[in-house]
Amino acid sequence: MPKFVVTVKPGTSQEKIIEKTPGELTIYLRAKAHDGEANEALIKFLAKHFKTSKTSIKIVRGHKSHTKIIEL
Image (cartoon, rainbow, N blue to C red):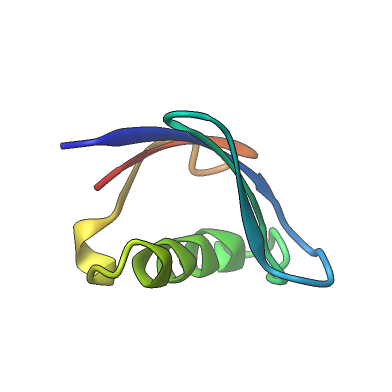
């Protein structure tokens, strides 16, 4: 299962993804980092980007951090 290091920037005006290096992404999300909204938006965004289901994406580490480990 592929793993990615993701840096999340919540509360931005537009949603986009930037690949820093292979396996390391920066993702800008509109959702605020409040009550897990940014984590839910992150999973939805990644599912759409990788064309997979939301249930196949898991936050392995960093639920309350801007830097997360994501597993597909």
